Length: 101
Image (cartoon, rainbow, N blue to C red):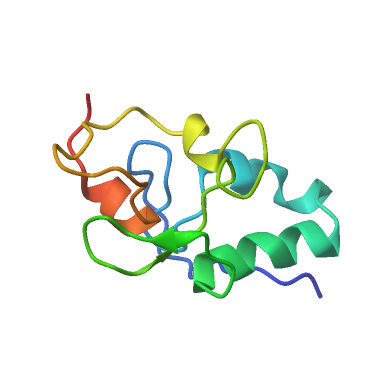
């Protein structure tokens, strides 16, 4: 059986699922991912793989750019307004709650 963070409480909030907090891209590509790719995303969602703390709530955040990649998961969601005094990324929950730009 394939691991999944799905909670069957799906609602698209501008590219992020309100139930599991995966991006619509991650959801669409989930079946084609390897077990290690799925495990990596689940670690990011659980906060066990983090690059910093959320600028808004202090919860663990994984930023692909900070982790050395060329792009980040957040590039695939609808643009949100940035926080005025934040120099780091928001967690998926806080990003989902940010007004659209």
